[in-house]
Length: 257
Image (tube, rainbow, N blue to C red; front, top):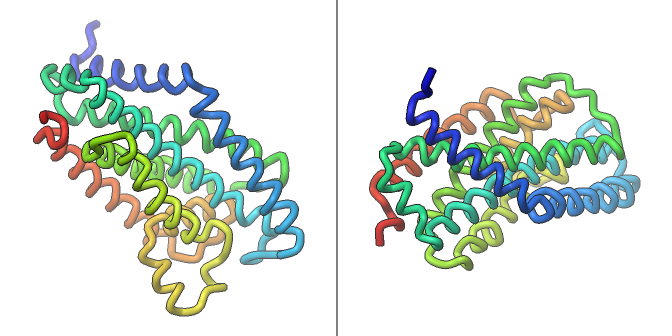
């Protein structure tokens, strides 16, 4: 029984992304694992022992959800932004544009690759975290769905970045000046209750804050925001970024010049 052509195209694009991730695994999987191991050693073991509890949990337990989500976000974003821009730079993205595959298939294939790398790194970091502490995961479906939504959001954001990028330096601007500050100010290392009122209000405007807290609820059963608010915002970002990325791809913005 033959498969639908769109499914064949989707599988082909996604498989190419997977092969790319595994072919250069020393660049895509090992560096984040080493970086997060250092975070656990320095912040969790050395500094965390002096800090004590945070939000009713040991400091090492508290930072595990944030560091796992941070690794997922950064790698999902970085994978698709570099991969799709590489396709633009190599001019083989034009083959996709003239193929009969609809725009949503092309977008879904690249996003699948970004999500997969984010989840792979997230699983590796979580396994490393279990060497240093134990987390019982009271809400596994919340944990898994928040991982998937966070990876999807930043895969879509990475795609938008790649569409507008004109040179490789443009790929690094957003992670350096926007993504990294938002991540560090998103409650990865601290509870929002420690902040003054004005800083708490500013944190509520940070989308990463909601992803980290949804994931923390899945792992620890605690969150600084209602779970439904976090999911509503994450689903809203998926819908908005997905529609915007699809529109850019259909119009050939940054691709046909």
